[in-house]
Image (cartoon, rainbow, N blue to C red; front, side, top):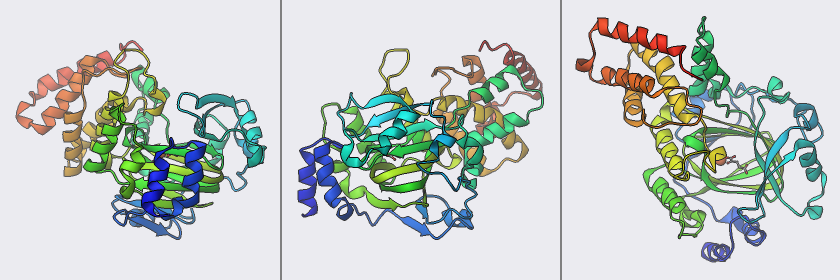
Length: 410
Ligand SMILES: O=C(O)CCC(=O)C(=O)O
Ligand SMILES: [Fe+2]
């Protein structure tokens, strides 16, 4: 059918529902093309830095050689119990059910049993995309692509903190509670559908298909797309599918077995799984996308209920994003700037000082308000050297801060 009738027929059903999927699957491969979206396809990961370039576009590596990523050769459906404790509780998502009836938890063992059923025996389509495997055996035999460890702001912060010889209580606490988002194991049944979203805090993504196949539909982060996305999420009266509203912006990308995709921060995407799939993927914050990471976080925070307490959809957020920004500023950005000032660092200072807010309190805050204020003050001092206090005063302030450091009640 024509694109317009395909679109129109999808409009009658809710995204991901069995009726929607029946239509979608028949023709999805024909109707999502946006020549403005660049997808670079590479044979392998050798010279990945050169290939990724400024990392403004999506990249697909047919083969993981050269990426510096380590994945066990025998990883598959039969060997999963060896790598993930069968007792581990896994968050799952019933892709075919109504919103409100989708989320559940189950043991890994049971989840794998569900995958053993042939598709015709299955009553539900299960998509499990939230298992972070740092605490599983898989962690010992997996290594993220070098690009991720080299560009992750969290990794940089971890490295600096780990290198501190006499660690204050605060530093130890930071290391213990550092957000971990680079290692997810995704198990998706054939027919799974993940609706249009932007990954939490505008984080960038690597996505390696171990078994099966995934189809991504991606639209770049730009003002227009982001505005439409925000509006559609905020307006509860508008129940049109955002995929329909932004239809022509999406480009379809097939990620086959053994292939690895890199997606820059902020890209809108939705995902269809044509075959049972095992994926290892992860999210990382990048200096390059600092501003949009703040913009997207602010939007996510605006969706939280206005009441205090635990936000309902907190699990979909980069928990501790603001902790990481203050930590990064204190331990990476400001010291680096003192050692070797350059324009890149100055541009980060400018964004940090505009976007960070000492008034915002988050669950498990690493920083007290006065400490946040003093970091903000230091940032302003960098931008407006006239404001900078005399050397003596600065030393005094630093000593006071150091004293405070160990008295922060965690
Ligand atoms: O594989 C999927 O179904 C969704 C992947 C994704 O976009 C995510 O986890 O953010
Ligand atoms: Fe995603």
